[in-house]
Length: 462
Ligand code: NAI
Image (cartoon, rainbow, N blue to C red):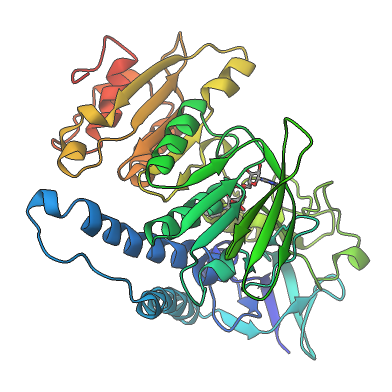
């Protein structure tokens, strides 16, 4: 039993980053985590392992499709599934181990177990009750399944089970064409699975720029994914080794059935608050079950804060990290700030998709008819040299001030390139500012400058 300035519940990206910032600001800090390893969903069963699998299968795709044309001859590699999973586990281990090292380095106590808050200022883990002047809830999210769909993590899986399958399925049905469905769907398509994605809406990745949605779907179809759009999954009937997915197209009453070896449920996530004891404390929740907070991440109960997937906003690791740092500043008596208008979103498929700020449709809803500058990667020398000429950079700028209001990239390294545009937005830059900035040749980033030029007198290479 110890006494702390702050106890953080949950060691995902939000929680552990917050803990480090709290410690840096001189607060006596502990973090509670019930998993065997630190890092939360992101490091253990989400972002990091999926990126390892995306990388490995992208290499396979390159070997199968592009090596020969570059003069690299020979048998293309065969897949050793066990080894691929071992590689993924090693990557996870390095990252979770890294977080443990950072906790020690910053003298943050890791209290192992699942926390509850029996009363204000107390955190209970097992039989121990610790004192905490401040409590930050960073307990994350869990998969939100559908009625009539039971996840067994073997045949009917969430992203967690999809990263641990015994073997590569012949037929994979993915429910939901959101980020998880498309990232993991493309992993298995590259591994030879027949992948069918059933999506309720008429476009992939709801909320994305319509141009991006169309191009993205077309490129994924080229990679072998099949889409059934405008269709609601009704139920999944599973045996020990097979499943039947029943869906209903929006047009018409007749139900259709798909056979699958594995079904991936990727229909969103919901806040995870089990066992925290929030109801008894009277902590307010939103209609969608999130913990309600004010602009400084404080709940309605004094001394209890919340950040990350468990509160409102996009369920993204980097949004949680930003909130984690900001709330630490608040707890330390300083001012914490997150600019919610400039949070990038990235889908790590090939090509990558990255967005920031408003979409063209959102701006039109706000009564702004933006000037749009678009540049295709086909006009980018570097992208063409590496078989990555698909996609484009699209910038939306204010028609009078030329200020950058939104950006979308579908193409090579989009997830890295988007940050130039995030910085531009943070500094209120105009398309002209970007266009006047020298960009090295030959880089993918030249496409960003070209899109900025296209907002003015015109791109050079189109
Ligand atoms: P999502 O919210 O991105 O997509 C869910 C999709 O399922 C939607 O398109 C929805 O229309 C569809 N859907 C819902 N019910 C359906 C039904 N009955 N039949 C057919 N389709 C249905 O959720 P997803 O992909 O599960 O991801 C969860 C969260 O994790 C998201 O907030 C996402 O941003 C985050 N995430 C982010 C990643 C990244 O940043 N690269 C990677 C993985 C997850």
